[in-house]
Length: 62
Image (cartoon, rainbow, N blue to C red; front, side, top):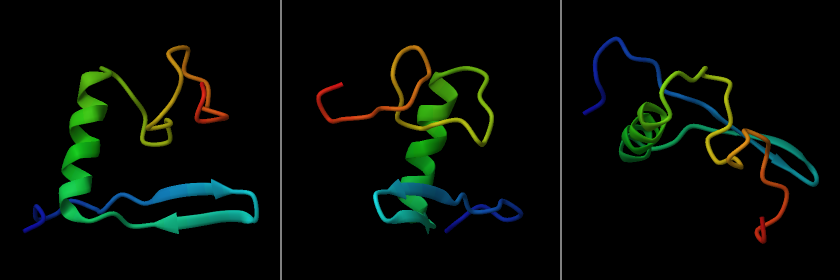
């Protein structure tokens, strides 16, 4: 069950044909919270999957 009083995160997925908003499942939300806590201070608008310098990942080879 999702924690009371907590808003569900929305992921903004950028694709070639535009942006799509996704609301992840509870288990995914908990995973994203753990990833965020490992980074220290982060804003809700920060990228989840990013390069070590904080920039966006542009290809799968990066």
